[in-house]
Structure formats: structure tokens, C-alpha cells
Length: 196
Image (cartoon, rainbow, N blue to C red; front, side, top):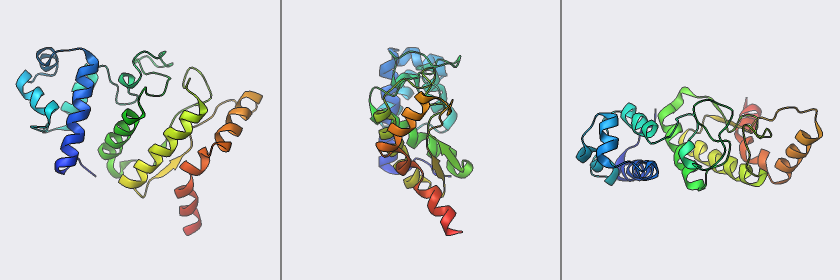
């Protein structure tokens, strides 16, 4: 399992925690009370002067700030909610750097426990994704690069598509392919198949 280590990892974690805290609108005292730590300890974590001793505390902080480990609602706070009850968003993040940070945190947390990553579910259905195909291709490219860097043995697959028999799904897939989407996600899957 890969962990956040070293000064770069500490800075990345601090920046992510500070970003969550700032987006939440909560004070250090308010957020500290919600996650059962002092405001000064929380401030140290958000400023890079300390690191939480357990990942569950990071998850609690994220949840109290409106994030969901399955889908970061905080990354697109004004977007329409997805079809799921926990407040996930159907839109891509407002800033793709948030997507990158979420991907890195997820892969590092999962370690080798995940063999394959599907980058979005039912991407052509507006209740699950309502961004552009171009943005989805870019998100796929970025996530694939991060996953390959942190877990080179993992397989990355394209976002799933629903109602394949419809003209709309066909147009979505055609545009995704024309923009290079499949080549960003499937190269390891095809190379690992050919290797064996």
C-alpha cells in the first residue's frame, strides 16, 4: 500500500485539507469540534505543520466539509446533484486539480486492493455525468496518468456508457473515441493482455 510520505506528501495533504476547510465555510473551531480535535491541531494539519496519525481522521474532516469519499461534491459545489442520496455531483470538478488530488488520494489509500479503476459510471446519462465529453476525456487522461504512476499494475478502463443501442449513446462513444478517450484509459489493459 502506498502512503503519503515525505515533505511533498505532507504539503499535498495540507493543501487538500485546507482547501476542504475553506470551501466548507467552517472555522477551525467549528470543524475541530465536529471531528473531535482541537482547533490548533486542525490548523497544524491544514498548514503542513503536522500530519493526522490515521486516515480515518482525514475522511472525517472531508465528510464534515461536504466531501464524499466516493464522489467529491466539494469539487463542484454549485453543480446539480447526481442520482445518489449522499449529495454527490454529476458534474466534473470546477478545477481539474481537485480531480487530480482526489485521484491521488484514492489510489494511495486503496493501494494494491483495487485491480481496476472505472473512471465514471454511466457517463452518457445526465443523472450521472453532465459535463462535456471533452472534459471527460481530459479527466480520463489525467486519472490514467496518476493511476499508472502510483499503481502501475492496475488496469484503467473507460467510463461506462449506458443504453448502447441508442443513437445518443453512439454519438457519445464516437465523440469520446474521436477525442482520444479510449487510448488514455485502455493502454495498460491491452498491453497486459498481449503480454500474457
